Image (cartoon, rainbow, N blue to C red; front, top):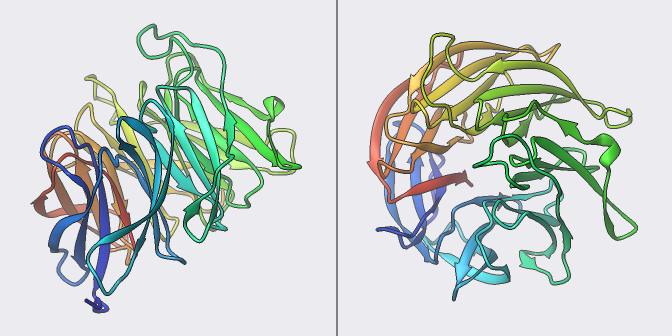
Length: 352
């Protein structure tokens, strides 16, 4: 089925412990904000995080197959509703929590929270190749329950493909590495440390400006950095700001962080108070201004995504088994809840 101009395909990663059976696909009507034709696209265990190679129509996913864990790749065709498995690499005993692809669509990064492992796979037309690079961290931090050892929660390539940034919740650090002479080299001289008990979780960056932003899980703060790739300090911390309103005193659990297509608005989610939070990005300095907080429309907003049109946010509420759809005010970034749709244990959303 060929999609119309006002229809965008989306894919949902899930936990399959309960009713979910794998990766789901849906269509988003960008005229109305309605979600249509939600259905199972591929049956597989625990595809909890997805990333997309739009150029080649490839989806990469964390997964579990026959009690082994790793990453899988799928081809998708706009004319059909299903995914087609290309291949997988199962080298881990526990599930990776995050996957990402570099801007050249040639390197797949997998982060494993439980096994303290960051793996870099070479890819070729969606095929995940053997003999990957593997990196492990060392150390611990202050929280005895969450920081007794390294816990790599997220890894990305910088937008110039020069460095790999691994976000380690367990040791309160960003670990910087690069590939030199076909070897993965840790650049310990470039690592970034956070205050104890921070628990950094995810990272994102502006497409048009040299600004990176890290969301912490344990303290629910946003850390703003200026990226200087040729400096001795490639990430200069320029601001730390709370992810929550000043009067909030409850449980904190920062989850996802994404920037609007216009690079003006930054959004975060927090599972402690089930919120989506809006910040304004100063285009000259990269500094953030907290604007507002919105109810996520469900329970435990583990992830959310801004659709390619920039008109909507789709929030994956894991514990309430639903997707909530918000319209985005294009002038000030405010969110308005439009509707909600049932989806089993959603943990991640990507758009074609």
